[in-house]
Image 1 (cartoon, rainbow, N blue to C red):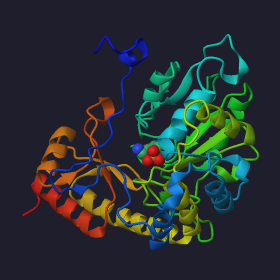
Image 2 (tube, rainbow, N blue to C red; image 1 turned 90 degrees about the vertical axis):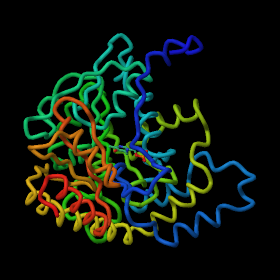
Image 3 (cartoon, rainbow, N blue to C red; image 1 turned 90 degrees about the horizontal axis):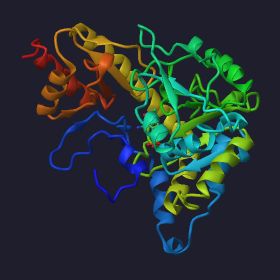
Image 4 (tube, rainbow, N blue to C red; image 1 turned 120 degrees about the vertical axis):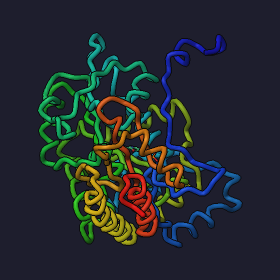
Length: 377
Ligand code: PMP
């Protein structure tokens, strides 16, 4: 604590991202990055943008990436907002739609709702913007209990598939929540960071659109925003690129926050990279299917070793071993050069979240897991 900090900063409980080690070579299965590189066309487009043009500010409205995204996702450019990673898009969305005055009622202080086990950045944004919230426990099977979101609220947010469980809901199951929340003009945000890995991946000809995506329902549900990232499916975590799709007035709300914060959060390189990535959607759909195939290969092998795994529709799996604590498994894997994610918290303290790497990386992980559980050589 420092007395230089104002009371807002003193109260913050910041998010801790997964480790990005520099000292030693690890097999990195801790931040859900894509193990495959982006296609050469995307790197080429970024290289081209890294020229003299950098003298100039980027387009504040991100028109080119928005046009490319709109075409790929079958929406209008006015229904797309682009930001510096989906974390920034989420931060803007919390500032725009939740908290005091949500739903146009300046007197109420309604509670934002999200699952107790979910993306751990949500409570951090709520803290940053002073948004009162209530967490709703996942069911015993670690699924989101949608019936609990049919209540008056200050808005709703959850990822689909959920993180870190990896469990996906069907699009049609979520829509009634959007309808319920629309009665009081409350916004529902569905964070589709891992959407392209649901089911057997994006359908051929569907670009990057995940099987359970709510994007096709955008016109019918004006209070629903979906949030997307290029960090996972598009192998561009290092570029920081994310976007939201929703009705025009939601997008305008996001622009109002952005233009009160930083008019140019998406630099020229990122804008070029995003537009090029959209043109390569077929490549990414293929990459997603490769990740899914590895995931489906690894799960039964882990079960043979006595691990319990939740059904994953994401590019990670959430696993535990009945005879080992999460902390012990995490430490033993780290010692063997394998980084995974562990939260020392309540019901998930014995779980590990393991990102899906290449087949070779996952074989190393499996062999380390076998050694640790006493079955390996
Ligand atoms: N949403 C969820 C559910 C995530 O797990 C992540 C990745 N940590 C993000 C959003 C943010 O992704 P990015 O900022 O890289 O777009």
